[in-house]
Amino acid sequence: MQQLAVDLTGGVDISSIEGVGPGLVLCIISETGSDLKSFPTAKHFSSWLSVAPDIKKQVAK
Image (cartoon, rainbow, N blue to C red; front, side, top):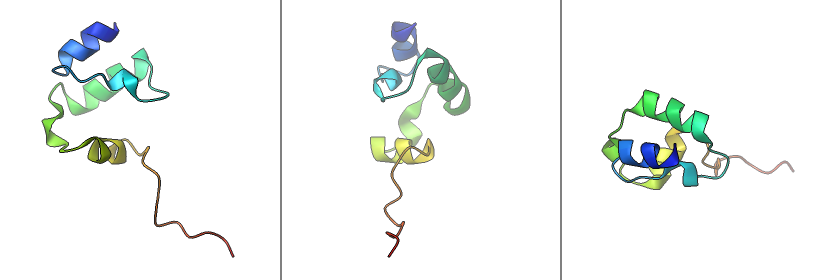
């Protein structure tokens, strides 16, 4: 399954993201398609996935 996902995304191993399993890989591919070139960097992709930390949150005083 993992190799199929890597093949579908042009060599990108989405499952290397912590917490991303085979089911989520299929969901991501179904939402983004197999071409991840619309995301210039891994940071853009993780932000789109909503797994990037929110650096704008203020610490409670």
